[in-house]
Image (cartoon, rainbow, N blue to C red):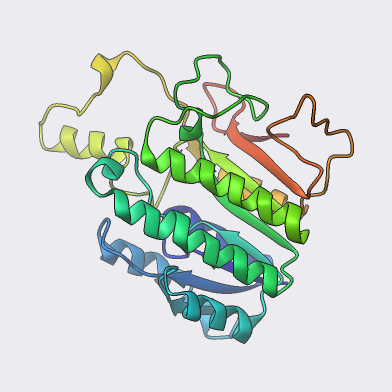
Length: 278
């Protein structure tokens, strides 16, 4: 199968592409290699895919999602059957410093992906949402069936917007879409702006740990291999309409359109085994 993976130089995108290649799929990788964090780390991740490029099983294109013409040309040239859209401007706190980066990548970029999928008859679009959409919600554990209308960061708001945009395209054009809400993914080749790497660096440098809210919080972490497994399982099962959906009591997780939202979370606080929450 020919699969487009956006954000292929990123932490999750690179791991997904590698696993797809190992199982025999052809991967078209897209990334703009921005400098949100060390570009050398992104280039090093791409080098892991080089053996597959030698056999034309992997192709990389440096493209910014804001460039609509370039995105369209990529779809025209390679005609991917399915898309794993993981490219985005990530990070909650950075959205306070640079909000326009989130609008460009997460809103403008996402509509370009939706349009390309629509016009090129993509079989299934799987895209990254985030656990941050739960925002001010206090009921635990979080569920896909919960209302998520109170995000507390622009990053979360753009991801909630992605879910709504995807639903619209699923309804209007029959495009199967699945949104995945990730809970703090960690592991080898991870992002250096994440807590585990920040804590390790502080410990090695004998510096105070950067703890927020006076340490009065807990957080789920999900291991990268489990996230990759979850993404591939979802990708292989295109979204379908929920025939039991009721507009008088609407379920936020499904629809009469081929659309759904899934949580990938640890099954146990002491383990990192991912589950699919339908």
